Image (cartoon, rainbow, N blue to C red; front, side):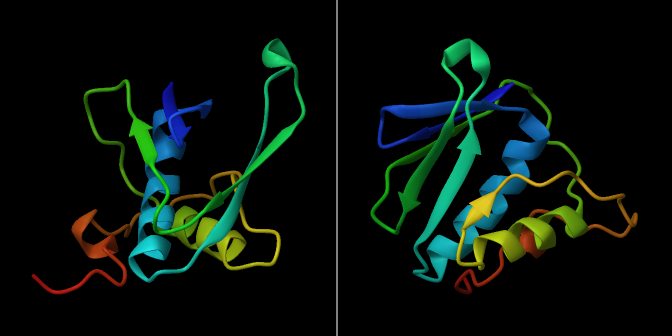
Length: 116
């Protein structure tokens, strides 16, 4: 289980594979200067409910992974998450669709990244 930490205080545990896919979408939007809301449901063990944070280029974000290996990337999942991030309701975790088997590498997913 990884952790997403917002502004040093608000945090939630997210499975490493899902967290990687969220990170790809979040960083792509921030590289383009596109702020958006990100929402998740809290576990009943911490009181339940729903949390929404406003993610913007000045946000302090931490993606903490507990596994030592980077999970494979499912392009369909990245696209599904990006679709929610671009909607009025903002980014939220959707179930992973079946992998088409032709997923890109992390480098190929540097959507909107400036050329180095």
